[in-house]
Structures are given as structure tokens and as C-alpha cells.
Length: 169
Image (spheres, rainbow, N blue to C red):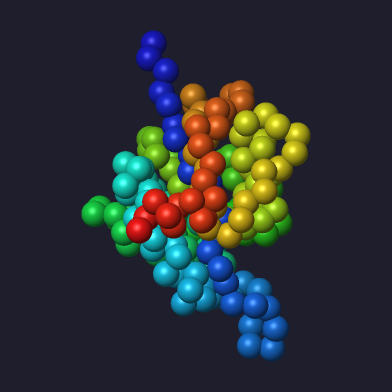
């Protein structure tokens, strides 16, 4: 029996507006114009690296949805974007894995979320006890042999936003 491989791309949302009087509701904070521009360059880097997404799963918060839309827009064939409540702050690992399992026919899955959740998810997917630290716009690829993951996945790469932007020029 041939083992299937799933490429999971974990992405933290881009630079967003500050919380405060203008955006008292954290769920409605949008990306800044600078954040959108930086994400476009990062998306171009992903294309240059021959990364493809079959689907993008995203937290329903404005800044993560905009991150997913910005990244999707740089691909020749933009992938569908699916809101996943479990990726919002406070979502559980088990609920995220349940959502991933629903995507078992897709092999290149992007997951856009928030800290500390996205770093904790990366660690759990790799069987680590400490969360990875994701800067805004960082992307890592973790390969798993099955959905749901039956054991630790393998970190293939982890790129900071700065490196991605240099590659995306």
C-alpha cells in the first residue's frame, strides 16, 4: 500500500491594525496596507518555491481571512478558502484536527491562524512539547503521512517573513 503524504502549511496572519478605539472588537481588526503588501511579496516567494495549495483553511477573524485572500490571489489558480471556527483564538487542537481530517482528499493544505495557537499546532503536529514562535506572516511546512495525523509529522522548512519577502522580490 502506497503511503499518502500531506503537506500542511501553517501561516500566521500578517500585520494588523492595533487594538484600540478604532477596533475595540479584536475579531474585526484588518490587515494594514503594509501588511497586505508584505504578504503579497511572501505569496510570490511561495509561488517561486513551487508551493501550491489545494485549500486554505482560515480563522474567521478579519485579519486571517484577509491573509488567506491575499496569499490566494498570487496563485494562477487561487485555492478555495474555508472559514474554520476552530482556528479562531481559543479553538482546540482536537477541533482543528477534525477540520483537517475533512480535507483528506487534498494534499496541500494551508492553515492560517493566530499566535499562540498556530505555534502550538505546529508543535503538536511534530510531537514537540514547546510551541514554535511564529512572527506575523511566517510560514512553515510540516508533512504528515495521514489525516488525522497518527504520529509526529516532519518539519520540512520554516521561513520567517523577512526571508520570504527577500525571495519574493
